[in-house]
Amino acid sequence: MFRYVAHADLDLYTSFSVFSWDIRPLFFADMNMFSDRSSSNPVLPSELDLVTGLALQSGRGELSLYYESDMPLDRTGLVQRYLALQLRYEFEWARKSSAASTR
Image 1 (cartoon, rainbow, N blue to C red):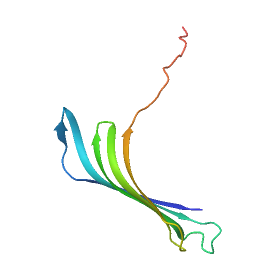
Image 2: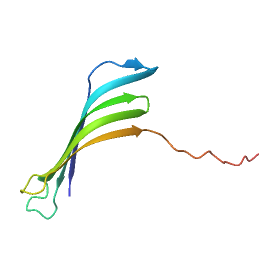
Image 3: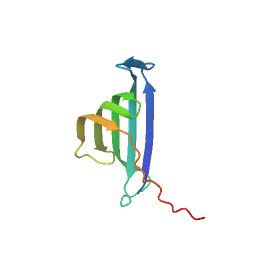
Image 4: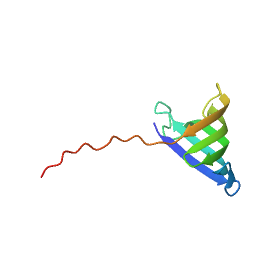
């Protein structure tokens, strides 16, 4: 029913250059908690998703190694865990304006 979210970035070092790329190393953490509308208290979190990792950012790109754990809070059960390596690039796709000129 509800989602509680927190995110933190911690710079580990000032930017440094490698092959003319300015690289910024950082530690990051994401926390998502979800509540269950069918429980006796629908506001109380019932699941926790926690992600922690290390990343190297340069311009619009990022290489990160992170660990994710998804676990129930209100009962025992399956806890999903995995380690991942992710390469990400941020971009924006926009159409060119085709506005007709009216004079």
